[in-house]
Image (tube, rainbow, N blue to C red; front, top):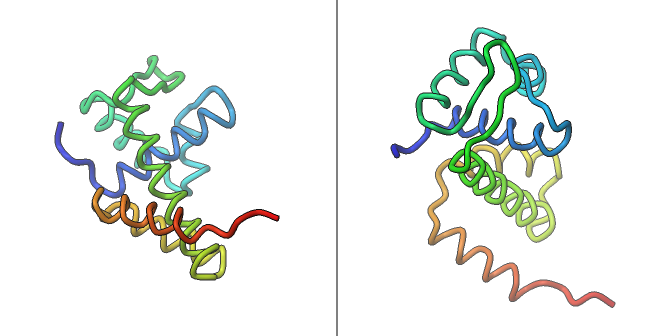
Length: 128
């Protein structure tokens, strides 16, 4: 399977989040969540379906395939890890941390993410 573009990763992550939050996902939900037009969302969903990441009933609910769910979970994990590091460790403003993490999650290597996780575990403040 070829690597997804950052934009398609954003769509997949959004679908994953919406699925966990609302249960059902439709094109309109994704468009609202990402502030994108329905035609743009439709095009992205079509590409993700071709790639084997999604299924969609005709004009209906969108579901993640097993590979789609696995990939989306990984993207979401990278995002949350980066937000956590930027905000809690480096004390970057939360909104800035979210924006930066969204950009960084698409390019960070597995090796760098693993080292970052080890660093965070090592420097975690013990709870009182």
